[in-house]
Length: 135
Image (cartoon, one colour):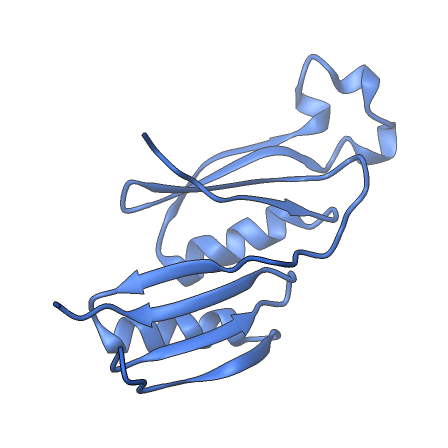
């Protein structure tokens, strides 16, 4: 089984995924617009540039998304959680995600981790960045 977060955006999915590609060090493997699909006639012309499916591969794990043509609701009730072996790399990613976003818990040492922080990025996606240490 593969479990992958699927994010919904309000017309800025492509911009978000290019940002995530740089911040997370992944590779975009899909970025298809509504206008590029056989169903483009069922989507208003002004929405043809929006993303019907995006996929980012980060070390074999997938983050997927699209622009929601049915209407956008602000994300709530979840966070995308990242576990990294290196505190320096966790800090780098946290700082990248925080650029233009809102830090909800500063990146710092906790009782369970040498580096943990929470941030809502500039696209509205909530993240938890954690340095994972051996048990």
